[in-house]
Length: 277
Image (tube, rainbow, N blue to C red):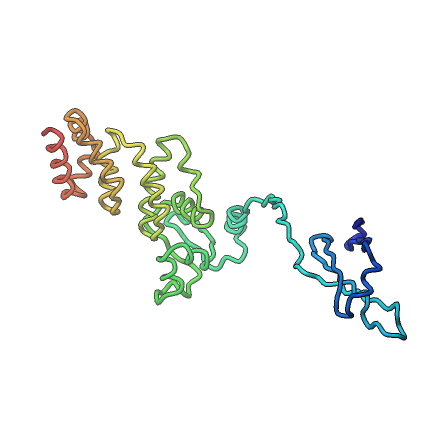
């Protein structure tokens, strides 16, 4: 049997030559007997039945019949996946522009310095449980369009607000001294407004820059704001040697630690005593 296929747009054409050897012998076949042959076309399996004596009678001596049957579902070849390049997310940029442009702002924060920062209650509430309670709970600020912020520098509040919208703090990548100072203020602000991710970012930043001059002050900050990671790093640094301990005890930061967090001194001395033993 010979056949050929040609692709005609979406159709497939197949020509079959059904050759029957000894055809004269088929005259003895009954009208229900047939000769069959199979072939495939574009993933489809077909079978043709040839009835040489179908409906044979004295009136129609040369009547034959053909029956074509589809035997199988088309074979499905797995298509090669071609990854499409996805554009980078513009969410940070769009939210930063929303904050900067002030469009749709429905609340304004007023700092002690007099600086004003318009913002959007829904975004603030989605990021901070404190703002959620203020704007959508039973607090007085829920209907207010102006909120007073006390005991926070305007520069720190501005950085915190930018983090709420964008989840990034580029100010912590500044030169070490300025970054450490900002991290200390931001940690307190993050704790105040329940921004756990920002608080952890500040903890990690401060943990990597502990020295003799900052150890005691940073330990006091960690104790006041329940920063266990930062606290353990400070204690470990101060108690690592008698020389380091003596140097820290001579700093103004240690005197601040004694005044603000006297209970932590017991833990510090215990750690220092354990190192000596």
